[in-house]
Length: 99
Image (cartoon, rainbow, N blue to C red; front, side, top):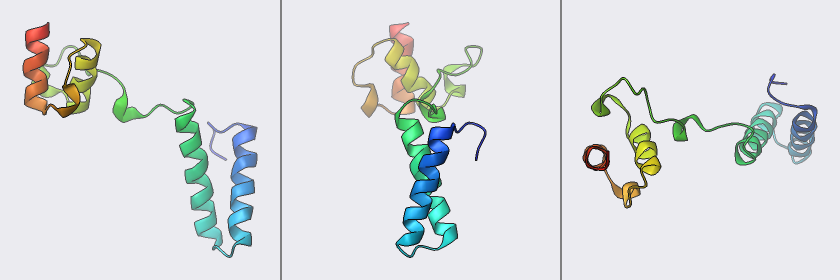
């Protein structure tokens, strides 16, 4: 059991693993399915943040030194419309003009 799982998630993992094994799935595959299912539910309930969708990057870095996702999050903070369809260079221009 990973340290971040609580007893509820461990019980859930065991139930899914046993269910998969009863269906004829190999032990290795049953463990994988159970772990993926539990982790997905943890992510969806907010217990595990998705690293990709967090943060706006190091404020000491130039905009070109940040990832597209970090620029997207900064554009979201600035309420720039149309940001989901923008490329990295378009996001940098929009952020510069909004700031």
